[in-house]
Length: 360
Image 1 (cartoon, rainbow, N blue to C red):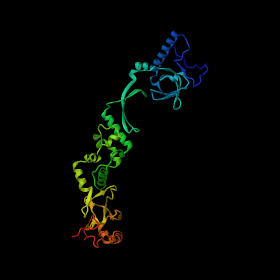
Image 2 (image 1 turned 60 degrees about the horizontal axis):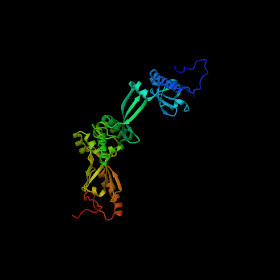
Image 3 (image 1 turned 90 degrees about the vertical axis):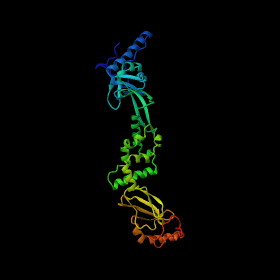
Image 4 (image 1 turned 30 degrees about the vertical axis):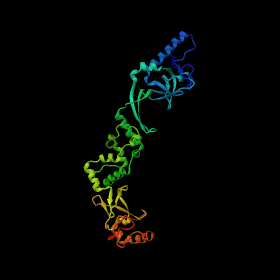
């Protein structure tokens, strides 16, 4: 039996909300019903051959996705709306979602048998933002229609690595297990990049843009944010620097400075224009000039602290401070910390980490 013809110019138009189904048939006896059912199934297959881009799968009540990527809809009350797969013969292709006017059901068995040449199975390896992990699945598709998905036990390692790096870029560098030493290493390189040539861009943006170079080799086998917590970023970043650069870094931008008291004080490189040293004032007695780094080109910004670790003076000119500012500061500190050592001549005094220097 031939499918119902399209509406002729003389016929009464059907309402748009009542699409005609090529699968519809009136109640009949069992043999004729079976015969017509077979013909209806054949209609779906034949339409699929004619319009492969109009093979569609249901994505919700009355809503379908075509293999060509378009969306289409029919009334939820229509009997055809119960079909998982249909082929659309006529479609009002206006608006965001076309209105189905004429269609036939298509059995999944027939779809897989007759359109196998259009069906592709591929590895879909993507970063799952909600799970914060790489998800790998084997996806079988006919065009834009997903026919089947299943977990993939052994995805391509390169695809996993690409998805993991994409996830890090989405999350930002804060997703990595930054330690204080790793951040200081980053800041030291940024400092030398500001004051000397030939250093890589280790800003957060620069590191994100070069993940393939410095991070990817050490993230093999990792698939989630939790896995990334096993990384030692200090070691990774050090390994990214050539041997001669590592030596230059230690020489020009050291992690610590040894002050006159013997203490090794860490340098704060968070401001590449003004690296700072926070040290108790009493530990600097006897030092005439401000410590310098970067081959003597950059003086440290000294945050001179009280015995309670509160700043009493910030300076990049220690000699000037000893000549003038010290005596005003000494007067105040002597009143607040009378048991501590506040000499008249700080350049001739012995630096100390204690309340007073040991007796000679």
